[in-house]
Amino acid sequence: MRELTLKQIDVFSTTPFCGNPALVCSDAGGLSVEDMRRIAAEMNILESTFVSPPESIVSEYRVRSFTPSEEYDFSGHAMIATCFCLVEDGLVNLTDGVTRIAIETNAGVMPVDFHFEAGEDKYRRAGQDEVPLSSRGRAGVLRRIMINRTIREFDSVGTSPAEIASILGISEHDIVRSGLPVEIVFNGVRQLLVPVDGARAVASMSPDLIKLRLLNQRLGAKTTDVFSLDTLHEGCVSYSRHFSPAMGMWEDLGSGAGASSIAAYLLRHGVVSARAMVMEQGPEEDKLSRVHVEVKDGESGGIDVKVGGLAVTSMTRRAVIDLDTVTVT
Image: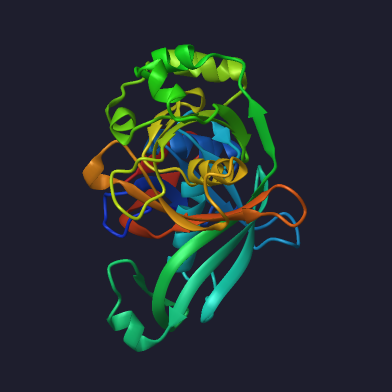
């Protein structure tokens, strides 16, 4: 018998029950993969992560990620939720400025940067886009958590805009008028990127998710990101929606991996220059995720991307597990 603390953390927002939720267990050492899978299935949140001691000397922690039905390699928003939980639980020693740690995943070792500004006065006067935080006795504000990735693989797609448009429930011309190609980007998982001319077309579409899953499987993709350079709010570079039926998730409310792939794609095609930007994601205009992305050409080839944002804990639950059952209260 073992008792665990499970947190629902909403990412890309500082408002509880907005943004994109993930379940995090920051003390999963000793749990089997089957234990983790059972807990994820019981909680039935789109993505759950479990933190264990590292398996190599170059990392601080080992993180495994699950949907309710299967283990997967990497998710940007679930990794940000995990890192926020580590900070909130006092498991990362933040210093003034940028603190970097390395985390092992099935997709490799991920460097993660915590942007923290120390000071009791800042803690007391935290603004809307900051999180007041007291970690290991040091007070201040957390400004953002950023994951570092290098994206090197871009593949053409052997299917027509007409077929993709039919599955998404939009016009073929919505894709063609964007003037950009449909591509697959490898970013820990293979992601199908579909450019569309017009944010309203993206917001109002109703994809056939069964056919989209079959298309993803045929193309060897795990997710589909449909995006437009026309945005719903000023100050953002793109508006997108993220679908993962091939991974057992219908629609993700905000994907860090999706945003970083779109940013790398836009730099590769000369749409943006190397810079920082904000991308908005999600199906509901009043609850959009805001993802911070920084992109530049990599020194060793590929495209270097930093992706992240803020998060908030919305719910804390207790789980008791034994060999046969998982009980959550």
